[in-house]
Figure 1: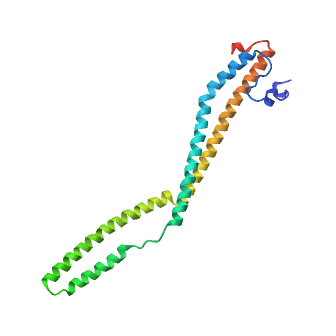
Figure 2 (figure 1 turned 45 degrees about the horizontal axis):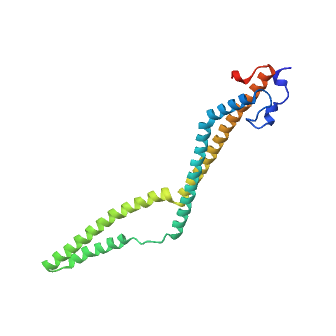
Figure 3 (figure 1 turned 90 degrees about the horizontal axis):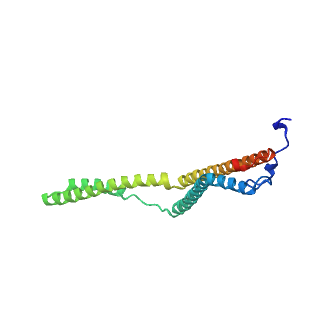
Length: 193
Protein backbone atom coordinates (compact mmCIF):
# COMPACT_ATOMS: atom_id res chain seq x y z
CA UNK A 1 0.00 0.00 0.00
CA UNK A 2 1.48 3.37 -1.07
CA UNK A 3 1.39 6.53 1.02
CA UNK A 4 -1.04 7.94 -1.58
CA UNK A 5 -3.51 5.08 -1.02
CA UNK A 6 -3.80 5.67 2.73
CA UNK A 7 -6.95 6.81 4.51
CA UNK A 8 -7.57 10.55 4.83
CA UNK A 9 -5.33 12.44 7.21
CA UNK A 10 -6.73 12.23 10.77
CA UNK A 11 -5.26 15.68 11.48
CA UNK A 12 -7.46 17.28 8.83
CA UNK A 13 -10.47 16.91 11.12
CA UNK A 14 -8.67 18.50 14.09
CA UNK A 15 -8.19 22.23 14.47
CA UNK A 16 -4.67 23.30 13.53
CA UNK A 17 -2.32 23.49 16.51
CA UNK A 18 -4.32 21.10 18.71
CA UNK A 19 -2.30 18.45 20.49
CA UNK A 20 -2.60 15.25 18.42
CA UNK A 21 -2.61 12.97 21.46
CA UNK A 22 0.76 11.30 21.04
CA UNK A 23 4.25 12.35 21.94
CA UNK A 24 5.27 14.76 24.66
CA UNK A 25 2.65 17.54 25.09
CA UNK A 26 5.31 19.97 26.32
CA UNK A 27 7.41 19.44 23.21
CA UNK A 28 4.26 19.88 21.11
CA UNK A 29 3.49 23.18 22.83
CA UNK A 30 7.08 24.34 22.38
CA UNK A 31 6.98 23.66 18.64
CA UNK A 32 3.52 25.24 18.25
CA UNK A 33 4.82 28.31 20.08
CA UNK A 34 7.91 28.40 17.83
CA UNK A 35 5.64 28.31 14.77
CA UNK A 36 3.51 31.06 16.29
CA UNK A 37 6.58 33.23 16.82
CA UNK A 38 7.77 32.53 13.28
CA UNK A 39 4.39 33.47 11.75
CA UNK A 40 3.53 36.37 14.09
CA UNK A 41 5.16 39.12 11.98
CA UNK A 42 3.44 37.84 8.85
CA UNK A 43 0.07 37.54 10.54
CA UNK A 44 0.41 41.05 11.99
CA UNK A 45 1.49 42.47 8.61
CA UNK A 46 -1.52 40.83 6.96
CA UNK A 47 -3.88 42.13 9.65
CA UNK A 48 -2.31 45.60 9.29
CA UNK A 49 -2.85 45.53 5.53
CA UNK A 50 -6.50 44.62 6.06
CA UNK A 51 -6.96 47.41 8.63
CA UNK A 52 -5.32 49.91 6.27
CA UNK A 53 -7.57 48.79 3.40
CA UNK A 54 -10.64 49.07 5.67
CA UNK A 55 -9.60 52.61 6.64
CA UNK A 56 -9.09 53.51 2.98
CA UNK A 57 -12.54 52.16 2.09
CA UNK A 58 -14.12 54.08 4.97
CA UNK A 59 -12.40 57.30 3.84
CA UNK A 60 -13.51 56.69 0.24
CA UNK A 61 -17.11 56.25 1.39
CA UNK A 62 -16.90 59.46 3.44
CA UNK A 63 -15.50 61.34 0.43
CA UNK A 64 -18.29 59.96 -1.75
CA UNK A 65 -20.92 61.15 0.72
CA UNK A 66 -19.31 64.62 0.79
CA UNK A 67 -19.16 64.73 -3.01
CA UNK A 68 -22.83 63.81 -3.30
CA UNK A 69 -23.75 66.48 -0.73
CA UNK A 70 -21.61 69.09 -2.53
CA UNK A 71 -23.21 68.21 -5.85
CA UNK A 72 -26.68 68.63 -4.35
CA UNK A 73 -25.74 71.99 -2.79
CA UNK A 74 -24.04 73.39 -5.89
CA UNK A 75 -25.72 76.50 -7.33
CA UNK A 76 -25.43 78.18 -10.67
CA UNK A 77 -22.97 81.07 -10.85
CA UNK A 78 -22.99 83.53 -13.69
CA UNK A 79 -19.71 84.55 -15.27
CA UNK A 80 -19.20 88.27 -14.65
CA UNK A 81 -16.40 88.35 -17.23
CA UNK A 82 -18.90 88.01 -20.05
CA UNK A 83 -20.50 91.29 -18.98
CA UNK A 84 -17.12 92.97 -18.41
CA UNK A 85 -15.98 92.07 -21.94
CA UNK A 86 -19.15 93.54 -23.43
CA UNK A 87 -18.98 96.72 -21.35
CA UNK A 88 -15.30 97.20 -22.25
CA UNK A 89 -16.18 97.14 -25.95
CA UNK A 90 -18.85 99.76 -25.17
CA UNK A 91 -16.23 101.89 -23.41
CA UNK A 92 -14.00 101.88 -26.52
CA UNK A 93 -16.96 102.95 -28.60
CA UNK A 94 -17.81 105.70 -26.09
CA UNK A 95 -14.20 106.92 -26.15
CA UNK A 96 -14.59 107.59 -29.88
CA UNK A 97 -17.55 109.88 -29.19
CA UNK A 98 -15.72 112.14 -26.69
CA UNK A 99 -15.11 115.62 -28.03
CA UNK A 100 -12.81 117.41 -25.57
CA UNK A 101 -9.24 116.43 -24.60
CA UNK A 102 -10.18 116.37 -20.90
CA UNK A 103 -13.11 113.99 -21.47
CA UNK A 104 -10.90 111.83 -23.75
CA UNK A 105 -8.23 111.51 -21.03
CA UNK A 106 -10.79 110.67 -18.30
CA UNK A 107 -12.54 108.13 -20.54
CA UNK A 108 -9.20 106.61 -21.54
CA UNK A 109 -8.08 106.22 -17.88
CA UNK A 110 -11.41 104.60 -17.06
CA UNK A 111 -11.03 102.28 -20.07
CA UNK A 112 -7.50 101.26 -19.01
CA UNK A 113 -8.68 100.66 -15.43
CA UNK A 114 -11.56 98.48 -16.64
CA UNK A 115 -9.27 96.64 -19.11
CA UNK A 116 -6.78 95.88 -16.31
CA UNK A 117 -9.65 94.68 -14.11
CA UNK A 118 -10.84 92.43 -16.94
CA UNK A 119 -7.31 91.07 -17.47
CA UNK A 120 -7.05 90.26 -13.77
CA UNK A 121 -10.46 88.60 -13.89
CA UNK A 122 -9.44 86.53 -16.93
CA UNK A 123 -6.35 85.21 -15.12
CA UNK A 124 -8.31 84.48 -11.95
CA UNK A 125 -11.07 82.84 -13.99
CA UNK A 126 -8.56 80.62 -15.77
CA UNK A 127 -6.96 79.54 -12.50
CA UNK A 128 -10.37 78.93 -10.92
CA UNK A 129 -11.43 76.84 -13.94
CA UNK A 130 -8.26 74.76 -13.69
CA UNK A 131 -8.81 74.20 -9.97
CA UNK A 132 -12.46 73.27 -10.61
CA UNK A 133 -11.42 70.76 -13.26
CA UNK A 134 -8.84 69.24 -10.89
CA UNK A 135 -11.46 69.06 -8.12
CA UNK A 136 -13.89 67.47 -10.53
CA UNK A 137 -11.31 64.84 -11.53
CA UNK A 138 -10.45 64.09 -7.90
CA UNK A 139 -13.57 64.92 -5.89
CA UNK A 140 -16.59 64.49 -8.17
CA UNK A 141 -19.17 61.83 -7.42
CA UNK A 142 -17.86 59.69 -10.29
CA UNK A 143 -14.26 60.05 -9.10
CA UNK A 144 -15.27 59.20 -5.53
CA UNK A 145 -17.24 56.18 -6.72
CA UNK A 146 -14.17 54.97 -8.61
CA UNK A 147 -11.99 55.55 -5.53
CA UNK A 148 -14.50 53.58 -3.44
CA UNK A 149 -14.42 50.72 -5.96
CA UNK A 150 -10.60 50.68 -5.91
CA UNK A 151 -10.61 50.72 -2.09
CA UNK A 152 -13.11 47.83 -1.99
CA UNK A 153 -10.94 45.88 -4.44
CA UNK A 154 -7.90 46.58 -2.27
CA UNK A 155 -9.77 45.40 0.84
CA UNK A 156 -10.82 42.20 -0.95
CA UNK A 157 -7.22 41.59 -2.04
CA UNK A 158 -5.88 42.26 1.47
CA UNK A 159 -8.46 39.93 3.05
CA UNK A 160 -7.60 37.21 0.51
CA UNK A 161 -3.89 37.68 1.28
CA UNK A 162 -4.63 37.44 5.01
CA UNK A 163 -6.52 34.18 4.44
CA UNK A 164 -3.55 32.82 2.48
CA UNK A 165 -1.20 33.74 5.34
CA UNK A 166 -3.51 31.99 7.82
CA UNK A 167 -3.65 28.98 5.49
CA UNK A 168 0.15 28.89 5.37
CA UNK A 169 0.26 28.86 9.17
CA UNK A 170 -2.37 26.09 9.30
CA UNK A 171 -0.36 24.10 6.77
CA UNK A 172 2.75 24.41 8.94
CA UNK A 173 0.77 23.23 11.97
CA UNK A 174 -0.63 20.31 9.98
CA UNK A 175 2.91 19.46 8.94
CA UNK A 176 3.91 19.50 12.61
CA UNK A 177 1.04 17.11 13.41
CA UNK A 178 2.14 14.75 10.62
CA UNK A 179 5.73 14.95 11.87
CA UNK A 180 4.59 14.19 15.40
CA UNK A 181 2.51 11.23 14.23
CA UNK A 182 5.32 9.80 12.09
CA UNK A 183 7.93 10.24 14.83
CA UNK A 184 5.60 8.68 17.43
CA UNK A 185 5.03 5.73 15.07
CA UNK A 186 8.80 5.23 14.84
CA UNK A 187 9.29 5.59 18.58
CA UNK A 188 11.09 8.93 18.24
CA UNK A 189 10.17 12.22 19.96
CA UNK A 190 9.64 15.81 18.92
CA UNK A 191 12.59 16.86 21.08
CA UNK A 192 14.95 16.34 18.14
CA UNK A 193 13.07 18.87 15.97
